[in-house]
Length: 384
Image (tube, rainbow, N blue to C red; front, side, top):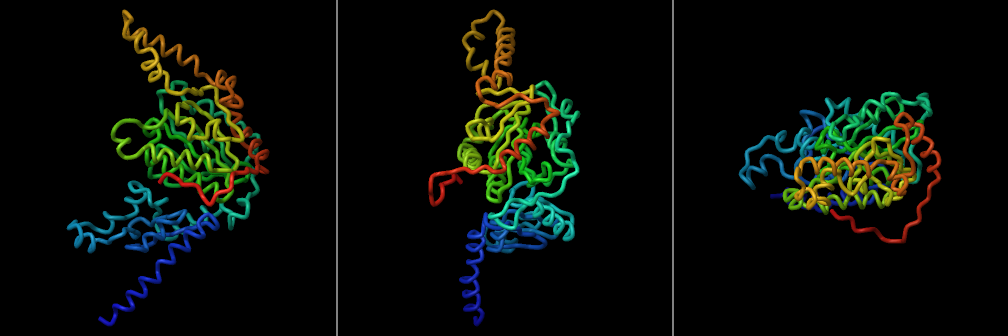
């Protein structure tokens, strides 16, 4: 038909949109608001954006819409079931935030951009703050249970520390075992990465490693300091995650934390076991400050797992294996307290939980002038 040449020229010319988006990635903030449908190639615009809010009920995105899906794979599906806001904000992780309507979407964009500079050449915008920098938060003594087996909501800890308890969470509905959120400390924007013990006990898996790695890279690109709150029993293990490539995905997070040159501050709230301690900006990743609460347990692995492996022969040979195991676990636990970790230089200091906000604000002020020299390279090769 006469329309074919037009279609071909439009198709050939439209690809540059994505290339230009990539060229500007990390130079200026990229936001793709999904107010309606985005099918086929146009779905790569949000796919390449830094922030993708999606309006509930009206927005959807998919590489092939329902008619194409029906024709190619014979699947009957609605646009909402295929790529609606719930799918992308809770299952795929392509969307960042599900919002009620267009107005809420625009407001979310304004809130998001309030934490960002206009370009990577500037510092993020500081605002006047009337939440005292030296505020001691009594509730922090109560929030985290002494027992390492009991869960709590880490967002309560974050709210108690940051200015006015305000957070702007990225991907709150996806990979909930890690919390990634923007907040402010003494008026200065920070990016917070925190393990969430309410989900999977705070263990890291494939999706949470992807979520954290992307957030760390985003903050680093725009000079937003990072605060890590550790309570992590490690990475998920087993055949299911190994077959899905957890080494590759966990390596993304290691890569992002290592590559970030912004100020990095780490607080160990409770568990900091094995590779979980590493990827949440442990000592080897050059944090400008790394402190622990008295409840912290820093170790190559948890007391139960460590005891079962290290003392398996002694436990098996004991007259009462259960009693022997319990005794060994208790001994192990005594060896992983934060004061021993401080002596081994795994952390800088053990702090009173109530002093967390003032401690972070002071460290942030000292790290503002941080400059990091790295070897020249075109770019690294991130495991994707």
